[in-house]
Image (cartoon, rainbow, N blue to C red; front, side, top):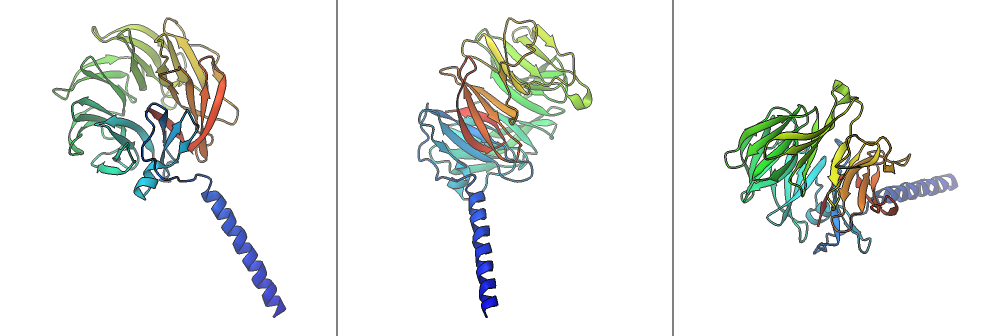
Length: 351
């Protein structure tokens, strides 16, 4: 009897220890109730991709004024997980479109309470979305060899534009849609009225990020591809003449910068390449030393610039399975603060 009693005590103790460990792990990424109203002008949404195949993508909101972080907004508001690989987010008709790549869908939610408005299906592997005309949205894709056309009212796919390869980021500029293609050397120009490719510009391999600036120019970063021994480059394009006004070709396929951004003053470019680099737009070569060195235990993965004060925000994916970090640096590169965010933070949307 005593032996049985002691055995029961030991088993009870082990059960308590396992339960405590389980609760500790669950609390590693706490889920808070959705905010009834995200404070506009005070912070940004953080797009956490999640680990591939795990279905643990999440949407966070970081209030930069009071350091409050709202975690996993979608799951808290809708009582279900967001899905697998949360790629990007865009605001259309005052609703947030959450592009979930590996789950082949776009979740449309209210910005007031993060509750679902609808789910856009019929997509293969969506990457980025952009409203190109009122209620007409283009969605780039990794595998479909096409850009999808989506009706923003009915939330349904209405057509597609054939475009071979992996289409990536895009911008609407001067009534044209400019689209990068990661599996080619070309930047494509699309007429949103006809949904036809009107022009293409040969650049370098691995088109990824692009932006337009106050001088009326378009900057395109082609990241190259080390696995295919393809080199990339940085380009400045005149959208009126479709001519390349500046190009810096990379001399190694192993040089793969990503996440091209610019400062508010419109004179400096930033990008990530195992560290944060910056260069003036007038420079004729890429810098050799980082502006901000990547910590030894970090993996710089996402980048955005505060449009108000010019602070530099860098997402750290750590080991791509644990919760990541958001580092806030001053325009001079001094670390100001950091936030704990979700798993694999990669993109942002200012609010």
